[in-house]
Length: 359
Ligand SMILES: *Cc1c(COP(=O)(O)O)cnc(C)c1O
Image (tube, rainbow, N blue to C red; front, side):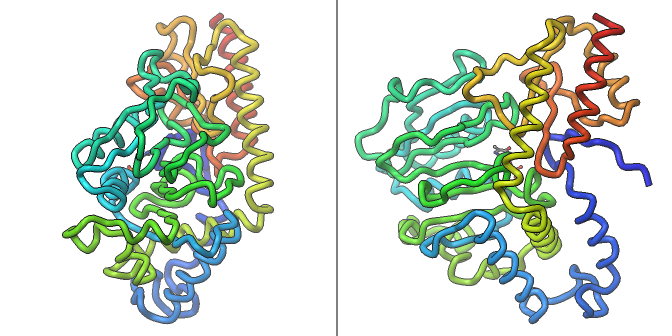
């Protein structure tokens, strides 16, 4: 077997232990004599999986009783439309803080359905900071405040939560499960699975129950959060395989010691990579120190002419998918939960050697 270190931004690395469980489960899952892809989602084995996954997720994130856990298709991108459709009338305002490309996309989607008020926008400095809260031009009565907890492309993360009278709706696609959070601080949390949860095709939404009652009408049944809440996310056939993998990932995280332990490891991984970048004139990261992401670390080479060689040699050294997003250029190392600390160590070693031979 030859596993490489995968720094992909998403779909991203999965824990090897989980992949090995999947491999051995495939022909005969849970003693059913079938794979998990071939069983009814309403049969007792899958219903048990669904219940266990929710119980484990509630335990990992300490989700309070008055929140529902929903599994929806359509990715985080669909939630950018479902949030305004489920929380506003077309006369309502919703406040958007834009700290990167995903927040911009979310605001653009909401603008089709309500008054999406961009109260802060970090585009003026190429999404490398979070505008100070004192400068946010908030609406008088916003239905909600939308933030992107971690901007995956430029690597900008909220390390503390803004004040808000309105419920906070947070896109946590690339940071969920990387550390403990206080779910009670939020109205809605959504996250596509393919960064820290599991395979693409399933999206986690955590909603405070009183917010399930605000959907505008008429909406397609599958566009209302309440439809999922009322049916344990089985209003129609859910993506059973992706859900199964998410369940394995939750069990794996609990085995590792839960999110306190993940936070310790993630902070250490990110800390040493930023330290290596900052210690060199050869590499740099432009993001303000107070909002550098633990999960996505973009960096540029002082000489962009060396980008091609860096990518070629890093790939040859078993370090895959380091190419930065085209809007930022340079490199990006996504170091999600499933990327081992040894991968970060290997990357730093490679970077040091590359600088020595090319600097
Ligand atoms: C990846 C990502 C998305 C897009 O997710 P899809 O599941 O592809 O719709 C949205 N927001 C953030 C922060 C992301 O990292």
